[in-house]
Length: 201
Image (cartoon, rainbow, N blue to C red):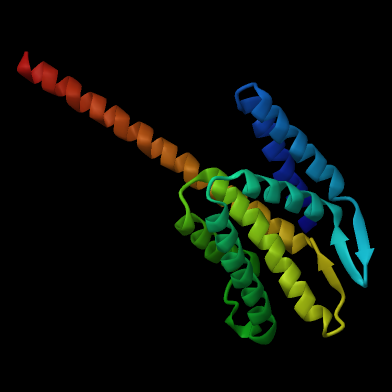
């Protein structure tokens, strides 16, 4: 059931990109990326007893390419490591102290990690890079720790995808409301200028 929610998120993102974004190479690249991500999510690889979803590998490669192409490479790399270890720590804390979870785990994790991502940088692309890369690295760190306990490990389970969808949705909504705020401020400024002209007349 939870994976259906993930697919629902991904298809909504694809529809938004395909039909609402301005036509161009950027839109086509993002739309193709979304389709490949959806396709890869149906396949799993087994390696040394660890199950890895193919879409995680694909997403990790793409996010790292974007990180390398970014201007602030070192800053983004350190930010990814910081949030990755924060995510791994939250996962381990949830195992050792399950009582502290007073609300659904996905909500608590999303709020904490979204706050960190939004606080670290104001650039939307950098926020997406940090969110995707850090969650995958954190999932790898967490999986390597619990693998030593001989647990069944899956890198790219439903919870991780739900968390990524929640984070990206939070980032998009934040920027959406920020754009609305800027436009409203522009409208108010224009009205003030118009009122001043009318007063002077």
